[in-house]
Image (cartoon, rainbow, N blue to C red; front, side):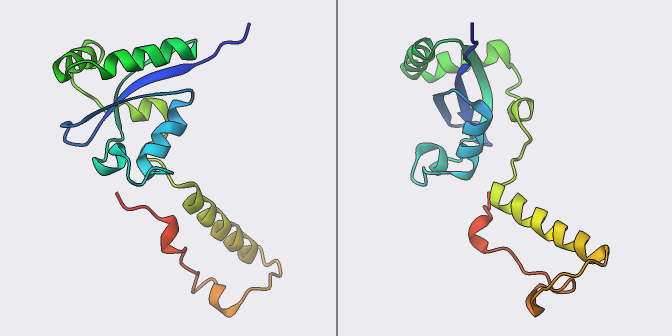
Length: 150
C-alpha cells in the first residue's frame, strides 16, 4: 500500500513574533514557495516574512491533516506556543532539517549553471560562438527579476 505524506506546519518570522499555520503534501516545496513569495505576493507569509519552520507533523491522510490545521488555527497563541515548545523548546528554525537553507531560486541556479558550462567550454578550448557581451571577461548579469532580496 502506498504511503502518503501530508504535513501540518507552523512558520514564524525571524523575530518569532508572528505565527502561521499551514498544510501541504510537499514541505520543502512549500517552504521554498513561502520564502520566495511564489504566487502569493500579498499573502500573510510574504507580508510578515514568515518562512522559518518551527514545528511540523506528518499525516498519512489529507483529511486528517486539514482537520488538524483547522484545529490549530482555532487555538490561542499561547496554546500554539505550548505545542511548538513540546517538540522544539528552543524554537530552532527547522528549515535545514527539511531542505537546503536558505534556498536558491531555481532561475538563479540555472543561470549560474549555464555560465559555468560556458566557462568550461571556453577552458577546454572548444569553439563556441559568443557575442561580444558574453565573453569570459564580461559575463552578462542575470536579470534583476530572477533575484529575490530577503
